[in-house]
Length: 272
Ligand code: HEC
Ligand code: HEC
Image (cartoon, rainbow, N blue to C red):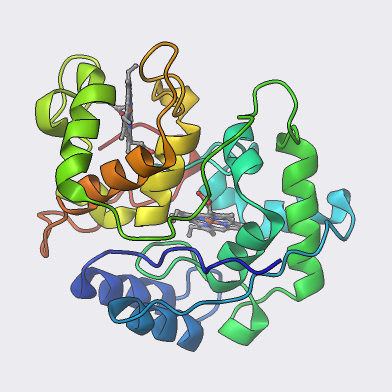
C-alpha cells in the first residue's frame, strides 16, 4: 500500500542544520554523514518528497528486535519505550495509529531536524533492514495491542495529507487544550507551556501530531478523545492545532539544546 511520506519536520532551517550537526557528531557511536536526512530536509523546504512506505507485514523475531532496541534505542526511548521529552514509542495509541511502514520509515531515515538518528545503512546508520524489521516486531509485540483495549479504534491518519490552518488551529486549541495549557498555550497551574520555543525546537510537526492523537498519559496529556469528555477531535482539528503550534516556532530559541535534550529516559517530563 502506498502512502504519502510522513510530514517532514517544519523546524526552521537553522535548527535543522544544527540538528544535522548533532547527528554528525556521532549520536549512535560513530560519526555519521546522513546524506539522506540532509536531502530529505532540503526537500522539506520546497515540495515534500513522496515516498512509498514499506508496508510489509511484521517480519523477524521479537526477541532479536528487543536486543537491538536495547543496544541502539533504549538510551533515548527507555527500556519500556517511555523515555524522552517526545512521543513515547511504547504508547499503545501511537502503535494503533502508525503503520509498519511509518515505523520503518522513522527508524531507517530518522527525523531530520530532531535528535532521532537515521539507522539504515543506506542513510549512514548501522542497522540492516532485517534488524529494523525485528525492532518493529519487538515494539509491536511488547507495547502494541493491535486494536485491543486501550487502543484508539478509528484514529485519524498518522500523517497529515495537507497543510493545516493555523488560525483555525488557535480556536481548536481554545476548545480542547486551553483548560489545561492556559490561554495561548503558555501554561498554568496544571500544565507548563507547550509554545515554549525550546520545546518546539526539539520536536517535529509529526511528533506534535502524534502527541495530540495518542496523548502522553504518563504526563497527563490526554489522547484526542480525552480532551473534552465525549468528544473526539476530528482529523482536521488535529491537523489545524498542530499547524497553530508549529506557527509558534521562532528562528532562534533562547536555549536551542538544553542539557536535557531528548536523551536520557530518566529525564522524561523533568524539564521543559
Ligand atoms: C487534561 C489536561 C490536558 C489537556 C486537555 C491537554 N493537555 Fe497537553 N499536557 C497536559 C499535561 C499535564 C502535560 C505535561 C506538561 C508538563 O510537563 O507540565 C501536557 C503536555 C503536552 C505536550 C508536551 C508533550 C511532551 O512530550 O512533552 C503537548 C505537545 C501537549 N500537551 C499538547 C496538547 C494539545 C495540543 C492539547 C489539545 C488538543 C492538549 N495537550 C490537551 C495536560 C493536558
Ligand atoms: C539520540 C536519541 C534517539 C535514539 C538513539 C533513537 N531515537 Fe527514536 N526518536 C528520538 C526523538 C527525539 C524522536 C522524536 C522525533 C520527532 O520530533 O519527530 C524519536 C522518534 C522515533 C519514532 C517516531 C515516533 C512517532 O511519534 O511516530 C520512532 C518509531 C523511533 N523514534 C524509533 C526508534 C528506534 C527503533 C530507535 C533505535 C533503533 C531509536 N528510535 C533511537 C530520539 C532517538
